[in-house]
Every structure is written in C-alpha cells, then in structure tokens.
Image 1: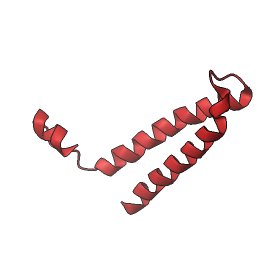
Image 2 (image 1 turned 90 degrees about the vertical axis):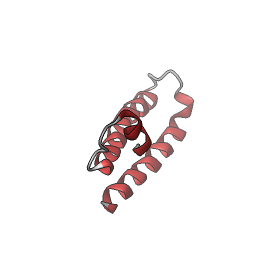
Image 3 (image 1 turned 120 degrees about the horizontal axis):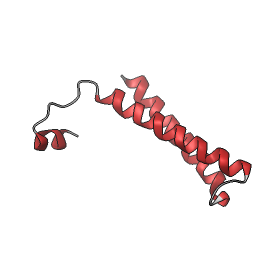
Image 4 (image 1 turned 45 degrees about the vertical axis):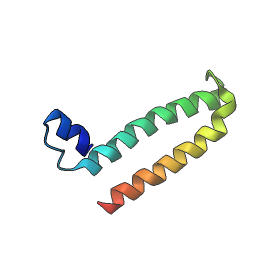
Amino acid sequence: MADYCARRGLAPPENWTFYLVFSYFRLLAILQGVLKRGIDGNASNPKDTDRLRDIIALMARDARRLAEET
C-alpha cells in the first residue's frame, strides 16, 4: 500500500486497518451469499460448500484480530 501510494503521489490513508477490515467484511458478506446458495443447492459448484465454510471462518477470525489490534 505504501509503495502504491508513493508511486501514485498520494498520501497513505490515515486508518489503513479500518479499510482493510471493511474489505474483509464486504468479501465475507459475498462469500456468505455464495455459501447460502451452496447450502440451498443453487450454486455452480455445491461440492465445495464445506471448504468455503472453513475459509469464511478463517477470514472472519483474521478480520476480527485486525480490528481488535487497532
């Protein structure tokens, strides 16, 4: 992020962790929708439903850890 901002001539965001945690939240909301479609049998690849559940849990733990460190 710092390199990107430097190359673009932009000031880095003041609260980068907030934006990072918010990005996790948005992605997890999308993944929850994908999981729900898998559970309902309306997903393009329902066989990965259990693996997706584990990924969501792992990402949610990471997001929470980041949020609590701030």
